[in-house]
Length: 608
Image (cartoon, rainbow, N blue to C red):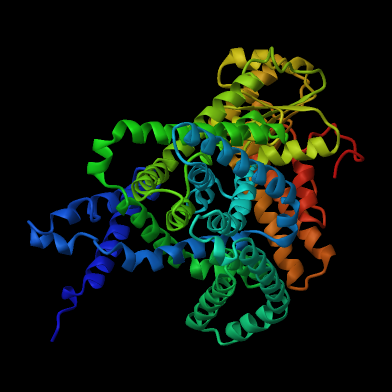
């Protein structure tokens, strides 16, 4: 019987799966993105790495990958699944809200970057048509790498998503433009084919929108009734593949169909299950794509032409970062957001390779020119995670420098609430205070949190409140209230003691971990201490009883009784003369939580 190990495809599959099983845990342990690991595997085990030594060492065929064309369909599937998952995170309403960024900033970024790069290449001796093709190709940015690192919900992620959406839509017009200006394809219709593709593609997309809204809920409902995960997965993959094939058949990119399929499923109640069940396939297929990127890097060619390659990579990165950051800044983005997004979007894209192939086929560039820029693209993709980290660090420093870490640059105003700690709880309090026109100033010890919060519009400074000098500079004697939200029980008790000794009449509202911690805070001088474990348990109990049909009156009475018991426990543990304040539960658990977190001296009209 023929051994499966004699089949190169089986060997490549074993190597890829083995690499995934080793790389993901190893790089996760050192908190390094596995993106770099997959690319390095492609470089090391590809035909330009150890694969080139198979003739001398036969056993290397079992640990190397040689047939890049054989695994490219799986790589393309990874990109398709990535765009599908992005569609699942979006909605048509949110996509519509990005239209200005997509068609203004996105279009300007692609055209300006492309024209600048094309102009430089033309001055260096490239023919005009070839320079235009190379400029547009290198102006594209990597959807497969950028969005997993930036997400789609942060300011940087939203800006990147908008520009990448325009680039994905623009790929087809770019390819047709290169064909139209080709000296050998003038008789093929050029612009006529482009308009025909766009019209047919638009009709197909409209049909998918109509049929998808009508049929997808029913199809997934039938799959869900069978309670078969396998059938649900099969239906999900079938929808993705059919949508991709539909747009590809019209000449559009298959990733447009995948994104549209994700958007349609996102409008149904099954999007969560679909996202979970397709996640493993997306991760593995994306890893295969990254391996194919690494396989295109020939270390020998890099060593022979390292000076020109480094110059080309740096030139492309600098131009794209400057253009993207400048346009975002002009559009109103904060300096840190514009800088981080610009650096993140500065490397070439996987679609750059597609456009380069189209330019080569149209005979706009020479084969050696295409090979050179393919290596530049592969190097750019390899360093994208490093660029992302560099951009994040630069943006953080810019935010800290522009916002200022000293109180002289953001003085404490009288009758201002001071919030120490701007995590999840701190942001909730800040949002509520802003809603009710209450001035506040937050203090946070984590620089990344400060930079991100400033980009989101919060009034926050960097400072270490464990130092007396920092507390002195907060001018707590003029503050309206002090709110402690950090999850550091010992430090919070210490701060309460210090502040109470300095400012006897200042309302101090503190987040407590449990009843014992609340007793310590009250004993130290806190005005209010809210045990998060206690309040969460009481709210959860109220919700359970109400959902079980128990009348609201008895439920509230039971909650009051429990609160009285906990008051006595806190009083006993803290050796207090009076029972501590634990506010009454309202029928709305969200309202109760917000009320407990607000200072006592807020009037009822100011409370939510």
